[in-house]
Amino acid sequence: MPLFDPAPIWLTLKLASVTTLVLLLIGTPLAWWLARTTSWLKGPLAAVVALPLVLPPTVIGLYLLVALGPEGPLGQFTLMLGWGTLPFTFPGLVLGSVVYSLPFVVQPLQNAFEAIGERPLEAAATLRAGPLDRFFSVVLPLAKPGFLTAAILGFAHTVGEFGVVLMIGGNIPGVSRVLSVAIYDHVEAMEYGQAHWLAGGLLLFSFLVLLALYAFRPNGQGRAG
Amino acid sequence: MSGIEARCSLPLGSFGLEAEFAAPARGITGLIGPSGSGKTSLLRCVAGLEAKAAGQLTVNGECWQDSARGLFLPPHRRAVGYVFQDAALFPHLGVRGNLEYGWKRVPPQERRQDFEQVVELLGIGPLLDRKPARLSGGERQRVAMGRALLAAPRLLLMDEPLAALDQASKSEILPYLERLHRELAIPVLYVSHSPDEVARLADHLVLLEQGRVVASGELHEMLARLDLSLSHGEQAGVVVDTVVGGHDEPYHLSWLDFPGGRFAVPRVACPPGQPKRLRVHARDVSLSLERHSGTSILNIFPVTVTAIAEDSPAKLLVRLDAAGPPLLAGITKKSGALLGLEPGMSLYAQVKSVALLD
Image (cartoon, rainbow over all chains, first blue to last red; front, side, top):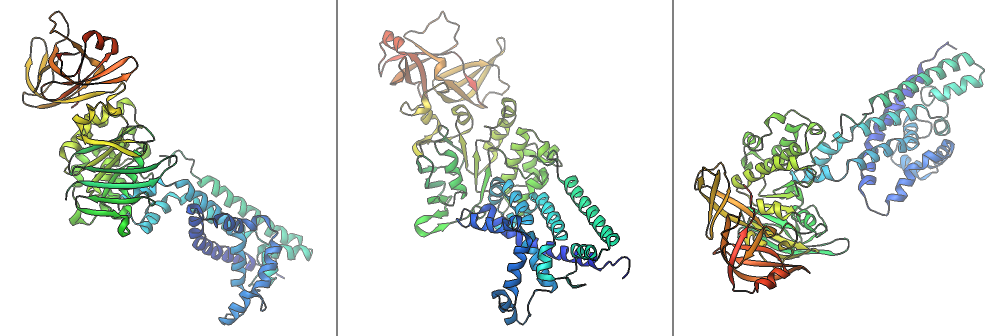
């Protein structure tokens, strides 16, 4: 075995990037709805979004595995579409990561949207901006710090996941053998040196990501008003 | 059909807004009333910001809302300009970006104001490259007015634009508001709780109490109506429109003529013939049976008592006819009894001081 195998690192970065992108695309409308709605569904849906914060990743992984398997409802659906089943594939891994990291993207976005308040939107409406126009010209720029936080947290949290990947991805080199799984592998095989390299790298990476997050966070002085 | 006709009902906290009023097609209409009377809610209904509001709204012949027909134009389809109490500038845009926000969304052929002209009218040229966070309260409010005007409104709505400002910023803004009043051809609905403020700016008043329109009409008449809360309290008083009649140079005074006589006021820097609006507070008017010669008061006019009302357990409010415009005098009940005051009586009104409004 080579001293250093970069494949898990690339796979991890690819998974985290794709997951973050998907999360921003579905998290934005979801967070917008949660921030604005007065529907009774708000509470239940917010609770569902927050579930991954509480549940052990193995529980989420287990349910996803069952649901996506050939006997599960989602599995039958993907089979019907001719996609095969998703467990132990990269798309399956992305789906699992999206579910697992959802609250880390939705909650900062929801907070950012709520912090904007009604007033700028009302002002834009009286200045002839329609709903979609208001979202792009007022909400997006004002929620920029929230988007930054959401993207960094979603990305970093996906990099750090283990249980969900193991449950629905297994440990297939190039498909689902991400960093955390590789480290686990090395430790199981008593290869502490390689485990240290990867673990140390992950530690440094995570620190840098969080440092960036706090350094870029506006201090409120320049933007207030 | 010109002007504004509005009927609006909206459930509010403790009472419902059930307001109906009409306002002329030009000039400033003050929506006035105590805080919590529904003024701001009414303004929001006109702008379309209250989606739950039912009713009917026509602005210069254009129907914006008619609940009976299921018509409700959303705010971005109503040609309104709205100046919020807190200015509500977009913090992520500079002053220029804020001014251009509505401007860019109006098709060029529908633009009614020239960009440079609005910037000049409001004196915001030097601020164009600043961020809203770096503006004073008064500057922010001026930018908000410019932004609203540049969106080519057919109706300008202002929600207590002076309420959040200190006295210095208020005095800074008022001249600009007066310029708008003179130079704008579109109607303005101006929410305020201050009779002094509307006396200075408005032509027409709509008085709201507990979500209902209690009265509406021409400014001078509304201010002098004894049956309305407007004519009671510290700020009670009328407005008299005068024309500069000449100056008394040795004493540094100016004469302001009105149908009932002439007011002497400290020298104003206006040529004869220029109109001047005066505010005469009821608390500054006293009554006497004869024209006193031994008094320091210069402004004494023959008047006729037209009505008397109780102002407080100790005080009376007297409406006077000064050969044209009505005046109000606030006197004690005791003085009223000593003078034997009754409607139709002729006597003299002594005006201790007046405030020049423009």
